[in-house]
Image 1 (tube, rainbow, N blue to C red):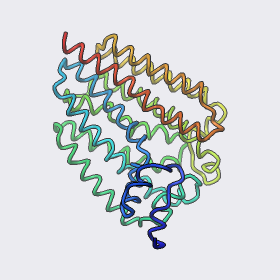
Image 2 (image 1 turned 180 degrees about the horizontal axis):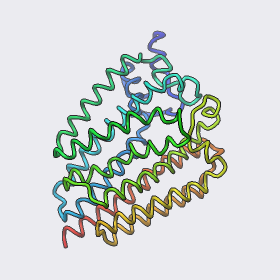
Image 3 (image 1 turned 180 degrees about the vertical axis):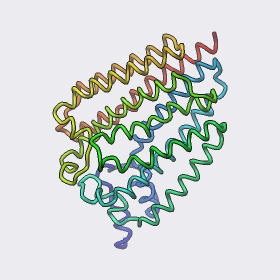
Length: 315
C-alpha cells in the first residue's frame, strides 16, 4: 500500500469499525466520510421531523396514498442533503477541525481530499438533492430551496454564539415543514408548532453530542450550549426536552390527531426522560450513545403518527 493509500485508509477517530473502513473502495472512502455515511445517525435525525410531518399531514388529509413514496423520497433526500451539509461544514471548519482531537482525522484536515475536491463533491450532492426535491410540488420545492439558508449559516454560528444548537435546530427541523408542504401544499399552524418543538429537541440532543468535545472546544474558541450549560446540562435538558414534548403535543392537537399519536408522543417523552437519567457528561462515549438513541425516540413518535394516520384514513 502506497503512502497516499495509507492516508486514505486511515480511519476517522469517532467512526471506527464501520462498513466504510472495511468494505468501501479506497478511493471512495474520503468522500463517504465527508457525507458521514460511516456514521449515519445525523441523517436519521434530519429525517425524523420529515417523517413526523409527512405522517401528521397524511392524517390531516385522511389520505395515505402519497405517504409511502414521500417516506422513501424523504429518506433519500435526508441522507443526501445531510451529506452535503456535512461536506459544507467540513470545508468551513477545516482549520478548527485540525485543532480538535476527535475531528482532526476528518478527510480535509487529514489531507485525504483537497478543499477543491470537497467543493466539487458538494455540488454533486446538491444536484442529487435537487433531483429528489423536484419530485414534489412547486410550493415544496420553494420551501426546500429556502432551507439552504439555514444550512449555509449554521457552521459559522459556533464562532459567534454559545447557542449554535439553535441554528442547527433551524436546519435539522426544517423537515417538520416539508411534510405539510409536500402532502397538503401548505404550511398549517400544526406544522409551525411541530417545527418549534423539533428545534427544542435538537437543542437538547446536540448539547449532549457537544459534550464530547467540550474541553477541546474551550481551548480553540468553539462555542456551544455544552460549554454554556456545563454542570447544569441535565437541568437544561429537562427544560428543552419538556418544551419539545409540549409543543409536539400541541401540534398533534392542532392537527386533530388521536390516541395512537398520543401514545407515540408518550413513548417519545419516556425515552427523553431515560436519556436525561442515563447521561453522564463526563463520559464522552456515553454521551455519544445517548445522542444516537434519539433516532429510536424519533421512530417511536413516527410509529404512533403513522398508526394514527391509518386509523383516520380508515374512519
